[in-house]
Every structure is written in structure tokens, then in C-alpha cells.
Image (cartoon, rainbow, N blue to C red):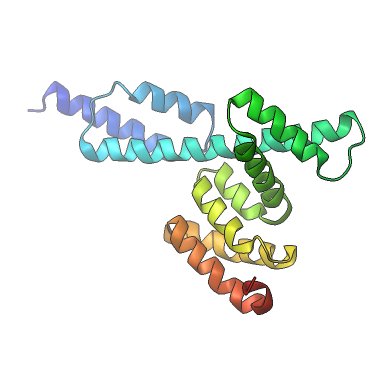
Amino acid sequence: MRTELQVARGHAAARLAAAEEMPFGPVLLAELLALTAAPMTAELALRRHVLWDKIIAGASAQQMIATNDTVHGLRGIVELPPGEAQMLAAQEIACATHTSYATAITHVALVERVGDCLPASWEALDRGQLTLGHVKAVDRVTHNCPPRVAEAVDTHVIPLAIERGWTPSETAKAARKLVIGLDPDGAKK
């Protein structure tokens, strides 16, 4: 005979299974918040933890979109010299989020680079398939590459990282290997 706790855990397991099929968004967030009070085994709690990573990744992508919109919005207000909109956006972000200017300008630069050269990374982050750590790893490796090389690395490595469940470090290693093959001179920089 099943106890009430076993029945409750069974319901939680079914709800988690359904949540695992959901895309990033408010429905997934609401379901995870509702599951916070549900009784869970360690395995179910771990599965819930993984779903929170999906929420964090998707939220990071949305924050990057907001950063991009901030930069482009400032460009639309007045004609600014190259780089000025990024600096102004970083100042505004630093002030609004109580972070340092250095942190904010690094974030703005990442957003610009990912938007220009790493679309597969951004999409995977937005879907919650990879973390911001993965995106930063690919950016670090391709930072000194020509845009065509960075985009080729992004296009090739990101699907593999998702399929194989690579860590950011493993993703960077694969990206580095590909950069060496595609741009040996640039890889030396």
C-alpha cells in the first residue's frame, strides 16, 4: 500500500517530467515555483535543480537582449561616435545594477561580440541548453579571431556541446582545437 508521501512524490515526478519538456519561459518558471513545496527524493530535487539552470540560462539570454536594446536605444537618441553608446550603456547599467563599470563594460562587450559572431551560442543560451559559462568560454577562445572564424566555430561547436553535454571547459577545448585548424595564425594571438 502506497503512503501519502509516495503518492505526493509520484505527482511531483510527473510534474517534473512535464516541466522538463517545457521551453524556457513563464510557464516553466511558474511550475518550478509551484514545485518548491512538493516532497521530493534527492533524484527529483536534482532534476528540479537542472531546470533552474535552464531558467538561469534563459534569463541570462534575456538580460543580454535587454543590454543590446540599451546600446541600440542610446544610439537612436543621438548620433554617437563609435564605442560611445557601449560606454554610455555600461555606465547606465553599472549605476542601475550597483555593479562596477568594469563589470558592466565587460558584459556589454560580450553582448556585442555574441550578437555579432556567436548566434548559435546566444540561441542555445536562450533555449536553456547551455549556460552563460559556455557562451563566455566560446567567446574567450574566439575573441581574437576574424568574425567568419568565430561564427564557423560557433556553428560547429555549439551543437556538439549540447548533444554531448559538455562543460564550459570541454566546449572551450573543442573550440580552441577548431580555431587552430581554421585560423592557425590567429590562434597564436
